[in-house]
Length: 484
Image 1 (cartoon, rainbow, N blue to C red):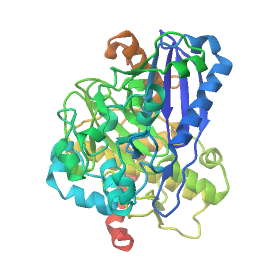
Image 2 (cartoon, rainbow, N blue to C red):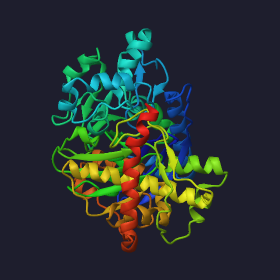
Image 3 (spheres, rainbow, N blue to C red):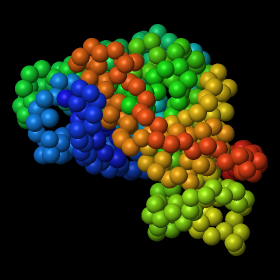
Image 4 (cartoon, one colour):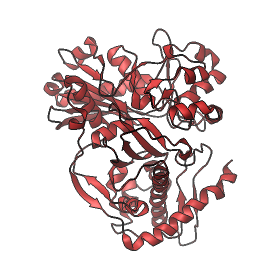
C-alpha cells in the first residue's frame, strides 16, 4: 500500500492506493485560514499536523489492515507558504500562505533586480516565498533573526513525519530562490534576501526518497517496517502526476479555489514577462508551465455567499445548455490576479448591470469571467511557446457541465472529463510514494486516466464568446487606475 498526503488550504486529504494504483480509501482533516488584516492569509503549522492526524485516523478506522501495509508515502502541498522555524524546530510565527498579498512592495523590489527573473524564470509574485521573508525582515526583525530554516508547508509536514529538512524541485521553484534551469538553490538570490543555503532544506527530485517515517508515528498508525517518504510535489505538479500530465504538451485545467492551466514541458521554457510560471516538474528532467488565476471556485463561492444559494443551486439554475453571453461581464479579481496581470491590488467587478440583470445572469457572468481569465492564461502560455490542443478538467468546479462548456468555448479547445475517480494531488502524491518505495519507472506509473467524455466548444457561440472576451480584455486596463 502507498499513502498520499495532500496538504491543501482548506484541509488535508489522505489517500491509500495499492500496488496496482487502485484507490483503497481516503479521508480528510479540516483547516481554517486566518485573515488578521486585509490581504493577509495565515495558518498555524500545528493545525496541519492535527488535520493530518485526523485524516490518517479516518483511514485507520476504515482500513486498518491496508494502512498497516504502507511502504511509501508521498507528500503534496499548497505552494509558496513561508514556514519559519528556529534552531529547536519551534515555529516562529503563523505560516504566511500562497494567497497572502501583504508583500507586494517587497515583491516589486526583488522583481526589479534582473537576477531573479533570469535565474528563476519567473516574476517575483507577492504570493511567492522570498518577498514574504523580505517583509518579515522589515516588519518582524526579531523573528527574522531567529530563523534556522525556511520550509514550505508540505516540507514542515515532512519534518514532523521524518525529522528531516528536505524539499523537492517543483515546490521549491515557487520560492524565487531556485535556479529553475539548474534545479538547485541559488546562493546569489538567497543572499539578496539576507538568507543562506544553510537556512534552506536539502533538495531531491519528487520521485526520490526523502526520509523515512519516524518509528513513533509508524507504531501509532499500526505500521511495521521501514516506510519511505518521497520528495513529493507542489499541489499542481502532484495533480499533474495524478492526471498523467507528465509528457510534453499534455495539459489540464484545474477549477479549485484558484484556477490553473497547466502544461508539461520536456525542456525549460521561461517567459517571465507573460506572468506564466515556469517551474520544475516532480519528475526528473521535466518542467512545466502554468498560468494561475487566484479566484476560480472562490468566485462562485463568494457569489453563493452573497446570494444565499449553494454553488450547485446557482449553476443548476443555468441548465445544461450553454447560453450566449448577456453583456454583463464579471472580473474575478477578488484577491488580485496573477497571470497575466501580476497585480495584487486590482479587485473584481461586475460591469454592464441593468434592471434585467437577474441572479441567473450574474451567475452566468461569474462562470464566464473565470472562463475568460483562463483564456488569458492560454494566451500567455501560447506566447511562452506552449501549444495546447485539448485539456483535461479537474477540481470541484469541473462538476458543472455548463462551466466546462463555457471554458471549452472560451478556449476554443475540447475539454476531456476523466472517468470516475479521484486523480488529484493526493493520488499524485501516492503515486510518487509508490515510485520512491519501489524504484518503478515514473512514466509507466504516471499514466492518464480513461476519458469518460469530452465537451467540445459550442461552435455556434464562438463568435459571441470572442466578442465577450474582447470586452473582458478591455476592462482590466479601464479599472486598473481606480484600484491603484
